[in-house]
Amino acid sequence: MQMSISADGFVSGPDGRADWIHKASDETSRAWAVAQCREAGLIIMGRKSFEIMAPYWPTATGPFAAPMNETPKAVFTQQGFTIPAIPAETPEQAKAAATWTGARVLTGDLATHVRQLKSEPGNPIYAAGGAGFMRNLIATGLIDEYRLIIHPLVLGAGLPIFNGLAQPLDLKLADVKAFPGGIVAHTYHV
Image 1: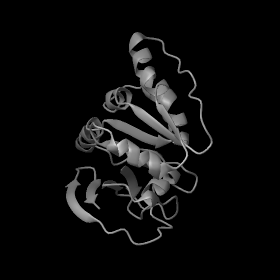
Image 2: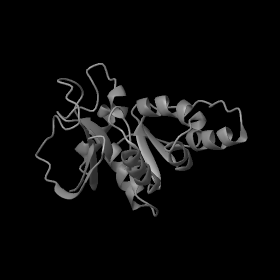
Image 3: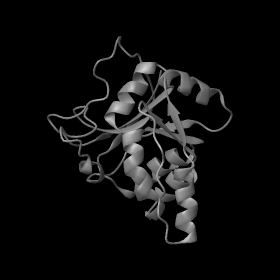
Image 4: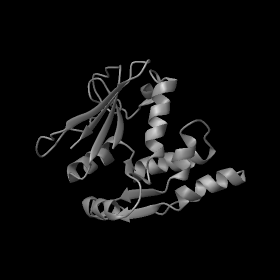
């Protein structure tokens, strides 16, 4: 799981906005984050995040576009979900859109599906998305590594991801990387 959080532990403001994520970003922190994303064999996310990301990434440029578009995806939903067509103006955009329209849609028990995905061969699973999906994923107890990207900003209120835990979550610090813009990436193993 990789998630940007404020210094006071929120992944977005009370209104769900997270436009602050890019304020302290610098070339080094972006390169690190892109490298982490490139390691993934599968990107998983909730339906709400998928609905936002799927139309955006196929036409996006920049360092995150390639790993986000090239990596297979799975979308989790409680309600069922039909992936809409994604318009593409170029062959490159059509190829990128295909990885989104070809995403696996998984309904039902999140933990059961995550266990099944983890049993499949391939590179690590990269969890992306919003606070609700991350809280549900954390509750499964199936995350092996937490990458918390701490931004030099205090929101004062917002959406946390570690609230409501049934029991404390013991983590072991595996790595810390500080970046010139003030972002600090903490990698924890369970």
